Amino acid sequence: MPCVILWRFPGRAISWSLSKSKRSPSKRGSISKKGLRFSSEQSKVRLYMPILEEISGAVQTGNAPKTKSLVEKGLGQGLEPWSILNDGMAPALDILGEQLRDYTISLPEIMISVGAVRAGLSILKPLLINDMKTLKGVVIMGTVQGDVHSLGKDIVIMMLEGNGFHVVDLGADVPPSHFVEACLEHKANIVAMSGLITISKLIMGNIIRAFENAGMREQISIMVGGGSVDALSARAMGADAYGEDASIAPQIALKVLKKKFKKKSRQNT
Image 1 (tube, rainbow, N blue to C red):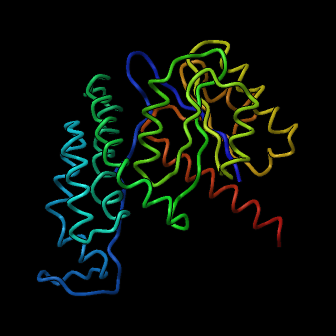
Image 2 (image 1 turned 120 degrees about the horizontal axis):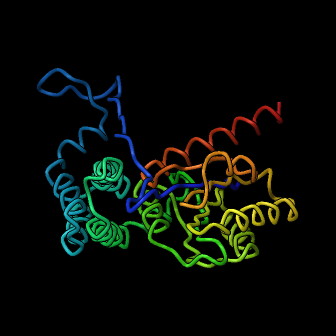
């Protein structure tokens, strides 16, 4: 079930921003010393909190070798891959997302952290993909034809992968047909397009038409973003969502998937 999303990168800053994830404790489970209840999985997370905090710190400081080493260490100690992702790496992305939103971090610093995230995911990704049931969705991501900018796209991919999405990166200067073909090949839920130059929004509209011509538009959610688009142009071209900054990409992706699922459920009743 594919979707298309847009995002914006104003000025020198990458503007996708992440809000802090909210995880409420289960009402059932073991009792901690303070009388709070935790599920067995949450209790395990608390047990491994020191190493999870180390992983978060390594990602934030952009220490790729340390991130990879700590991920391997956590797995060796019995931590589940999803726990390392959700309770170690994702909190670091939350913080980086806030810093992006507040313009308190530079692009070179962010790219260093991107390297740390990729180092950790190089270990986790094969394990996560083997457990497809727990993936939040499959995203086809690329900078559209005629545009060679990739920095914003790479930040969005980091945010999505760090929050449980499997992302297929098509790179930059991607023609419409490649988006359609990749979506079919990987059975994607979402198509995410990025563009910085003025003509990019015209190409994005052509890509959406390509999905319509292929008879796939109703099954796909489309997200768009980048300096060439805004909410108005995203709506005009027929995209499902527009991302104003990179750090909110995971929330937008989840939102469009839920919307598509609800629509399909109503059609089946």
